[in-house]
Amino acid sequence: MDESIGGVPVRELAATYGTPLHIIDTDELGLEVDRFERAFGGRGITVGYAAKAFLCIGLVEFIAQTKLRLDVCSLGELLTAERGGMPAQRIYFHGCGKTDLELAAIVERRVAFDVIDNAEELERLAFLAAGGPPVDVMLRINTGIEAHTHEYVRTGGENTKFGIAAADVLNTFGVLAARPQLRLIGLHSHIGSGIIDAPPFVDNLGLLVEWADAARAQGHPVTQLIAGGGMGIEATPADARALDLDVLAAELAARVAGTPYRVAIEPGRALIARAGSTLYGVVAVKRQGRRRFVIVDGGMADNPRPALYGAHHHLDVVDSAAIEPAHPATLCGRSCENDRLGDVMVPGDLRAGDLVALRTTGAYTYSMASNYNRFGRPPVVFAANGSHRRVVRGERPEDVLRNDLG
Image (tube, rainbow, N blue to C red; front, side, top):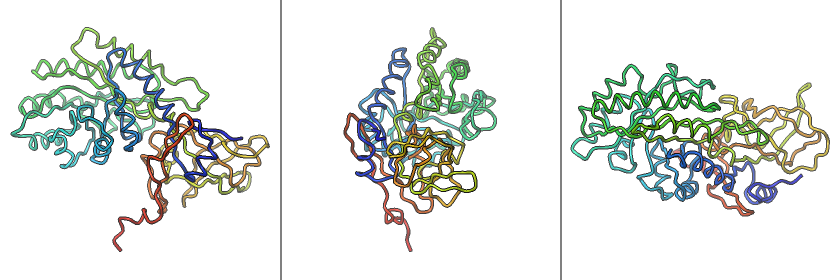
């Protein structure tokens, strides 16, 4: 068994870069971008990429060649966007606890607009912007709609920290009216992740329309409504698409037909997850009673999502001489934790030295990686059409120590 990613044999990738290895198939990514642009762009809906899902300079260079906007939420993400050549007018700034340096970057017009999350941020930004031309802003509103998803990735409703509470929105419009250095151009709301039905998005947009009407009645030039991201994806590559983008796009467009508003969305995971695979080498196979454990050379340091909120990634055995039928096993990493990566079916004679790959790891895998146990984060490689190149260097042990003072 010898499979390929982006037309490149996994054995070649492992021999060139080692394992663990994070791989982005940019052909697959391009297809996803095209799907979103055809479904949403064709209906006048702007698509932005949520940088928190995964970002590096090489990816920004890729995105800059498309029509996508870019949503950043830190100076690190902003600097990456700038180094990758993303125009400021296609970048906007998110975050519920922005620093003074981040607010200064917004005032300096390094982004097109800021999405204000709370009253304190509004006042701090207004103070920094005083005396200059108006800064374009949106308000993030907690519309109260809760997505039926894991509590750790829920971003709407009363049990989340994000956005301005519905009871405070009208008063916030009044505060903004008294702050001419800030210009309210739009409203934003994000309700969660892993959503596979259109109605929550449409209901959320409907509430934004009502708030936008109220803002315009107070004289605010609101024209843009961002309906969030969080579109769910299928559990395995063989499954049908979890969400019909054409249906969602048509319903969002219909909801604002005849209004003065333009709609935007900001997917992250739905755009890049399918394009990502994480390649591991098997280092041990062992039994404890009736359970069989397959231990790989990565773990929760390079992919914390399964341990954090039970995220599922489909496993493929991609390079092995194993011939026995598949049997249940627990896939684990080498961290000094019970870092279960998932319950899997693998050949009974899988052994050390074989290669396996977790799929749909393009989002929130590398971006959430850490140096736990002082492991170095893996390299990132782009593969497409039979060729490959490293876009992020893997960390060596000395890299992990680079900030130690001693």
